Length: 112
Length: 113
Image (tube, rainbow over all chains, first blue to last red; front, side, top):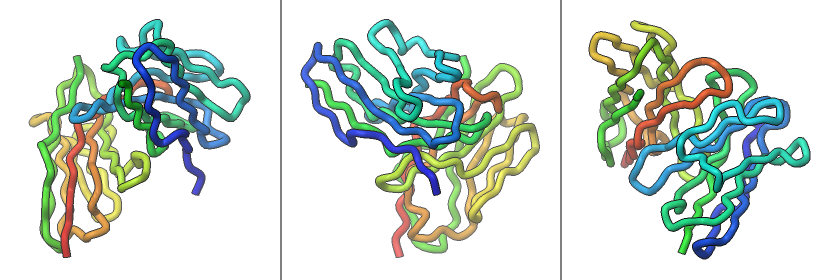
């Protein structure tokens, strides 16, 4: 069965550094998403992306965050200057239609 | 704003026990409701959904009924297996592509033989 793949599975970075989290969505999917889960808290929506532009974003997704689909297969989340509170599990997801999202297994980001 | 509250875990059961994981929601309008499951080392997977009041979603022996009067969508299974051990997430949203799902914290289920 096709799956969403995320790399790396774990990322450790220093506060203030830029990080790029990478995702390969399912190949024929049209909608792409990033969610995150801070330890012990709810899974939170960050952003959705369709037709090469952001279709919806949350309050969390401020100017420090950006997304890109650089080559038609990868979907990346960039955090420009990481903060301690950015430490979380980041999930990428994709969908062909509305409600059935396919999630990757996540990237655990630790900001020191 | 819209929100989802699910029971705190972990839930620990013996094989063949009955499972209930409570989920209640707060929403304006008429959202769709979902249960996602995350097995160890994998991503979240859609387990079942219901799109309107009194709908029952079911899959793999799991069921949940959309109760508008109690704003609930409790997950149940009559006889759990060790392979059901996972984290279960209740969520609400629309069926419209590209829109946000609102998740609960997740409930860890551990089933022993």
